[in-house]
Length: 497
Ligand code: NAD
Image 1 (spheres, helix red, strand yellow):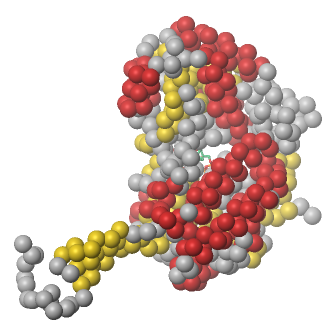
Image 2 (cartoon, rainbow, N blue to C red; image 1 turned 45 degrees about the vertical axis):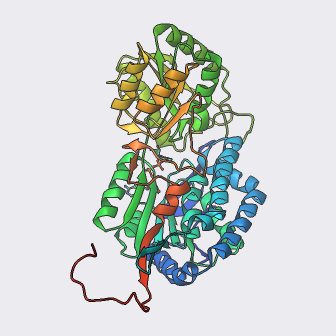
Image 3 (cartoon, rainbow, N blue to C red; image 1 turned 90 degrees about the horizontal axis):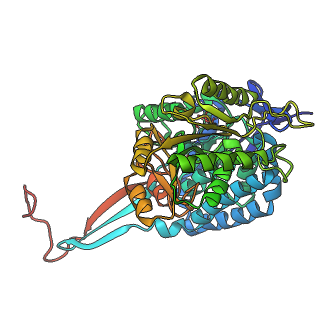
């Protein structure tokens, strides 16, 4: 019998009759099962369970909540092989890459274990005569997370461990394209002792998302996905009075200076552009070469490396790059390559006709490289989200900075250089949220926060780390006086002066 992935509501797996969507193994192109697409009633049931679990969980001491997190972290490590297999089977990324994804997620769980320390409030004794004042950080209530396909383990772990450690209860709506690892991880949290209803998972599509957005019982929404949907979520959340952080798409540039260690830069660019088949929001998709000499060397070297790149099934750990997530994604990426050629870019390496022996129906596109790309081309302006790296040539660093700053996205960027002055100038002037110096994927560690600028993030607070504590709590400030001799209240109609 083919598998049907359901929901996790009130601690129980619910396999819903009704609408469903096929799941694929992108490495082979074969259907591997189906996922339930939640109805309005099912999502409301999940919200009701989260609401019922909230009062007790809210009042559970943070240290007791942390004990669950510690056990959960151990279970993630013990079950890592199974989780990585589920990721690769539905996403297509190579197993060693899935392992890296899970490790980053575990680091967010480690951070969550220490959240009691960050929930401490602020206290002022004698804010006025015999008056003490303090601020405390209370949970929001029931909060929701909506996540993308490209990190089915890691991105949910950016959200719900921090949210529930702050005392909230949670409804998670993962990507309907690769839901199995996300669901398995949530089951491990229950095995670790998380009370039923604290974390609920509903699989589904727009119906499920809109039900969460419309519900007055949901007080905050964390979203990660593409920019048009991020903007929609942010607008709807504002309209319905919810706190929202909505992380969107990206077009990440790497500047290669003439003095860069070119071998190091090329190795870094190979992984950053083609790792995970380019399906990372921090993937480098534009290399900005400063001067024609470095551009020529860069393109020649990348071309050589690409010819040696091992592309194939995600389940074979000797491969370096797997397939794209769906046949539609493959066709969309190929369409961009067609457009790049039509718009006049130089196609240096063409990945459109790749064949993976034994996996002819898999959703593969080979690593692709364009040179002489200009700002008006769609391969430059749009997020392709595939293994396509474009090279733009500029005359100097300032021209490169201006180019990046004009782009609508501002997620990640990097400079390759040996010049500290250039690096410092770049990090200061660039309008991007996460910046690397000789580090191509400057993903912040779990105890910093993750967030882009411009149309890569809608909202005020970034994901995970310290910002997560502020996002998943609300400040309450209490001012207190105990009347006693000498400090009794007299009648007054003005502020004390
Ligand atoms: P997506 O926007 O298609 O889907 C994300 C989520 O939104 C999914 O759960 C999906 O079910 C839901 N959704 C899709 N269409 C919807 C609609 N019309 N109404 C309501 N909900 C809808 O994104 P994706 O293809 O799963 O993921 C890839 C995108 O995510 C890329 O753009 C990538 O850059 C971005 N991403 C960003 C970050 C970041 O941190 N900024 C991280 C990972 C991925």
